[in-house]
Amino acid sequence: MTDWTTVATTDELQPGDRKAVFVDDEPVLLVRIDDDYLCVADVCTHDGQPLGDGPIADGQITCTRHGARFDLTTGDALCMPATEPVAVYSVQIDDGQIRVRPGGAESTAETETPTVPAAGQAPETDQDGTAETTAGSDAEAEVEETAGASAMLEALREVIDPELMVNIVDLGLIYDIREEDDEVVSVDMTLTSPACPAGPQLVQQSKMALERLEGVTEARINLVMTPPWTPERMTDDARDKLGIF
Ligand code: FES
Image (tube, helix red, strand yellow):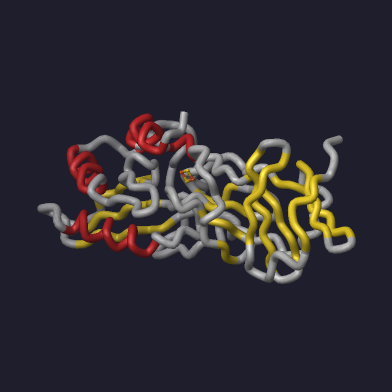
């Protein structure tokens, strides 16, 4: 077992403070939240950039580069484009000395673990999920291939996720498109995370993009979380843009 490394004293950090240090030549970030000390690797698992300057809220840190968010207690990646957890360190306080070592089991953090709402807790509009989607298959192939559906997919490609800068079709967010009667279309779409702050914006922009099409007077966007979105739903193009291989 790796020895404990002293990285700071309790006098150094006030609540809300952070300190970037090296432990065994690895960059590490120590954060004080209230009276708890949390420690994670100072490396975003998306693209290897430092996390240290990222905003911290609710026990989570957000990478300033592309917006990935991590739980500081568990290390879990909470939103795209990161899919892998960041390494966590145990923290030990001894006579005013703050010591850390790899592994989170002995963390002194008492902060309640932030949770992402479970699938099914997200707001759903008109209908619950009726998507006939199978996670892992190509996103576009799931939508029944009609001329109308193709035109609608093209229109929806104009809607860009503001955090990931990839269109919602290539992200695999479109589960189903149905042409109803009287120039009404229904779209089942999901989000990369039920807590995605861009959700209302994406829904509104999708509705507007479809209602600009000739022959569509009303677009009903149904936000569904079943089945939950997974990174496998992305097209290769989206993966390339996000640097996910
Ligand atoms: S490097 Fe952190 S989100 Fe891309």
